[in-house]
Image (cartoon, rainbow, N blue to C red; front, side, top):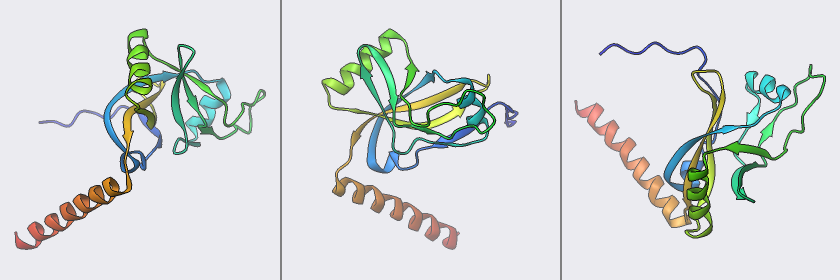
Length: 157
């Protein structure tokens, strides 16, 4: 099959690589994010961090808390670096997220911040449950065994 052409607009801005290690991701969804102009300019320069942030449902709205977007030097009206940003989801998704977090004890973990194919900033949120230390060790052991297995198959073949 032919490889599809890469879209020049699609670009990953920030990736939370520890999310899969610290949490058991059960489901994920794509959400929009409300940004100011200088924040978008800063994101075009790849200056964001989402490793220490989380999403929360408060007062019927979904918020991104403690995410970092570096200040844009040439902005006339600069933005706050760690302000709360509103995330955009449908009412149905919002009620489902509230149900997952409040009743089932799940956490909303930001996984990837990116520009989609239309050039809009989107975020992939993971609906996750926190892992205990023994779960993390088990995951690491499986990953190590997978690597070792690949090495053995490569050397044998």
